[in-house]
Image 1: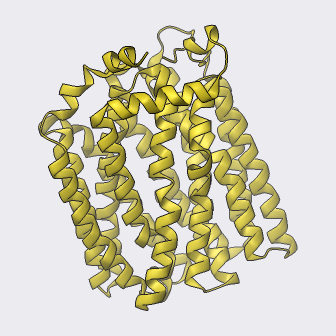
Image 2: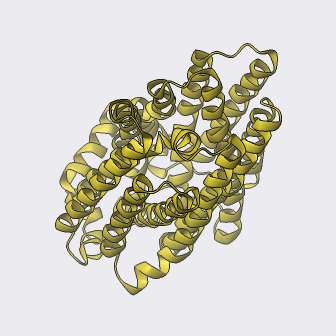
Length: 419
């Protein structure tokens, strides 16, 4: 497994990682609002708007597997520094083009694609660094804090800042986005130690064989395989609606561009609540219960959003969705760190995110087609909500109580048997 050469100081090293994550997620949050708002000024075609969301996540489908294998070979901290630096350069170039008035929808697409490839490396590296930084005993807490950084940066702060600065001066949010990524890269210099997996130091690099090891392990670990399927379904079905959120808010609820950021702000509050209560919910019930219940609540939220015409109610329901999906993500993240051996974590995460994040562009495009066919983004939210109830039912019949605890003890044995 990945281990820092610096013993002890787990809390201090986690703070460095969280500080970098906070800066990059703030930049991400600004960008995730500014990019679709820029796209809406260029086109109102729901397919092109959905296509932007698909383009942002397409690299997860194309690159997550090789990136995961690469992260099991190299220093993960250095990979994060390089990826965040690359994102800073690309978004900075985008700011120049916006200021010069040289932006087309295809330039927006190209920038989103390049940023997406760098995001695959940066986010995957941050995820697999968690066990090396804090150890096995604090995974729920560490994953909760990482989720909180993502929520605060991307929705609680980034959304309102992105929308307000875009309304003021369209170039400004892209400049802030670039600065956020640059700070994220610089902060990681304070994360002392080497974070290259030990197995990579003594074995020759054979990425094809290493990918096969990860796939073979996953094939034989039934619980993790089921979780990949469940997570992929949640991702696919929820993205039907999420890719249409900007149209839902601006066209259906008649919100202004600045108010759209406040709408996302409510989602950030909900996400923080989910991050705060998820570890306690796991202790008082079970991981399976939080996973199934959280997915069902996602269905409640999106179904309600499809039925209401009130901006206040819609925002509150979006906050409920954010709380539920964050709790689900914390359960899934801790399950990966607990069940997957450290030396395989990058590769298994690559497979996981190829499925889960690769489902996002598919869901986004299907969501665009649904809105086009149904004539309203609200009907797409209603459809997504009903389908999420089905995913919750599938998760309920797939996961028996105590499944996480029973199978975690077998993870290393599966690895050794495969070898």
